[in-house]
Image 1 (cartoon, rainbow, N blue to C red):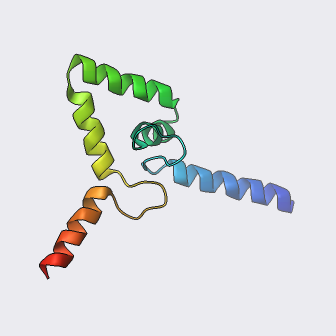
Image 2 (cartoon, helix red, strand yellow; image 1 turned 30 degrees about the horizontal axis):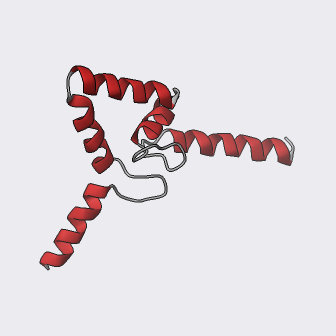
Image 3 (tube, rainbow, N blue to C red; image 1 turned 90 degrees about the horizontal axis):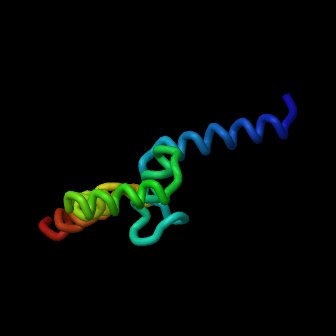
Length: 96
């Protein structure tokens, strides 16, 4: 196995590990990166996820609430915790 093949194989494994985690996208985002992150996790186009969220919002009203919940609960790429977890940690630190 050559060095080039080993590097390519390790890069593929690393990409798969990153893609296996549900994270908000910092590259493919329009508002908070939720649709881009979900699309990467499901391995579909982000436009399909955005259309599904818009349809849920128009038909049931639940799409907007789910989007906001996902923004609060899903951490962004490169961050250790979500917006909600960071807020809770700051509240706990102030209470001490």
